[in-house]
Image (cartoon, rainbow, N blue to C red; front, side, top):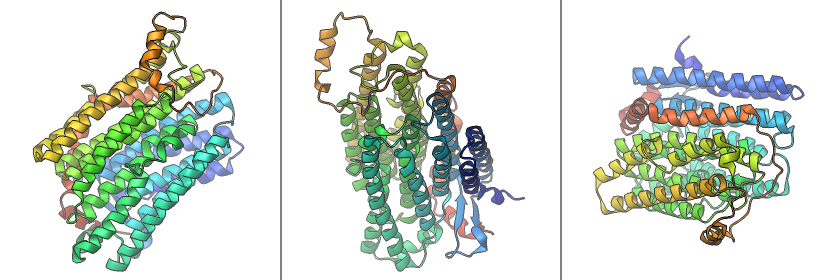
Length: 523
């Protein structure tokens, strides 16, 4: 069996697992075992494929059903796709374990097991399919698979707030999908194919004006999915209302699928029709507006949602620099952000259970009451804030170094904007840590001074719901601690990981590698 035979399993295994989980709807343990085994197998397969494509320097491509290009579906695994599938499967597995502990402790109120596991595996299948899609239409199919599952997951529990924000999320997603599908139709009408390798060869045949229209259409669609300012208005209100595990996986992965699509199209299809100046301006606005929103929030999930938006700006920034070093830094920062942002949302989920609220104006004294929880929040928080020697600092430094090597005035402005964003991120997360963990329950000394310092937060949106304090199952703590360990591993093994990302950047900016998709396909 060749390694090509493993490629379709990245999608078919989660779909088969979802079917089995649906059939076993009344058997909680069976569903849990099926979900864990499925995601573990995908992680192992993706790791094998990553080692294979990295060592051989050749991508793997499979033409599904033997249909020739451009009529058939091509699944394409290069270093970038394999790396993101590995990271995504690790994150999905950790969040799954977190949700298993939550479901076992609370019953089916927040995550009804019969619905959750099939939907979760379908979401995973859509994410993996998007990462290994070799043509635009299959990328669209991957988006739709994950979006259909996300519609179910974001409204689990059926509360008023979840239904309301779910409707907004669905409407925005549909608009994005319509734009994406329209762009695909226009591209096929103009060039007779939607295969990315063929598009990379043929796009230059079109007039620059036509290329620009197609380019902007795709960018608009992907920017909505990635929550790039000013198309990020929907995210801060949508994510915080969902159950903790759903919020964590959405924050970590769904926006990154949009970023991934931008990386693919910008480096492979529209190489000769750049909008890098526009992307730099948008990146700066995304960073600054997002982090200012975080500073103005008094609720932990909303703070993290706004920091999520602001840090998408770093990835757009790296993409707009458009050098191999910058693309490599962007990939590294994307991996870092997937892991760290997911970990922070899991930690906040534990805070909500322990304190009964996620408002930094109400939660206090957790350092003494739950010291382990304080550590689980603190480590990824300073990592996201970019303190050395963590992966957040490494990724930002690499982005700034790539921008400085270009040296234009606009690049210098972006570097300053990125530094300010990092400092304000650290401020907002550490302010939350200080108020929620360090401030004591029974200590009123200096309380009036503290209230005066944070009086500007009085009008900030409150938490969607206040809940009773609940016990934290060990498996939820273990899953969060495991993710914290992964964030530390990104720093400990930053050298080998960054080398892989640098090779990804070099290959994406090398037009020769694109031709290998057509030449390497097989049934």
